[in-house]
Image 1 (cartoon, rainbow, N blue to C red):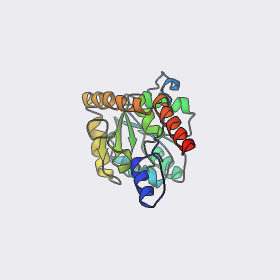
Image 2 (cartoon, helix red, strand yellow):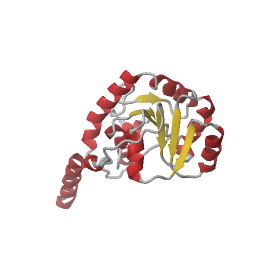
Image 3 (cartoon, one colour):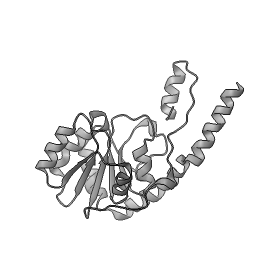
Image 4 (cartoon, one colour):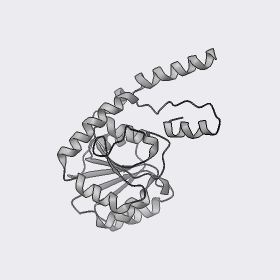
Length: 212
């Protein structure tokens, strides 16, 4: 399983589970960046309730006009995203985008927003933002363990809290030094999620299973 919290859950149910986190190929990430706006914020993910997109839509009309928010993804709440983007000139819906462009847009952004209500571990988008040295506003979830720490590796908010999300966004966008510190600390964490590291753990697990 991809998180220690989930591993604990299955162990309590009597399953023999093993913790192997998601991995990222750091070398394959595009080194280019795409900045479309001066103060660029980005949301990347499935446009569904559990990913927190509705919390983001709730605050869109109150986001200062000098902050531009890019929304990338598809899903059941897509029509609501389109409606908001048509109403608010600083909300830009790009729909589905190829992975290389997503990485370049993340790299070109000041902040990635990830207000998910639930996750299965350190997901790919989060790892990519950490690798691209883009600061993250994220809902605190147990599945992230000790790698996501408030004002150390990310700016953490409560799940399903639009007011906290707006406060975090307006605060962090103005604090370049804090964003820099968050990204530097987060980058050191993401190195532990490279395929070089996680691949070794997988090999060790496979060998253990074969011998058992």
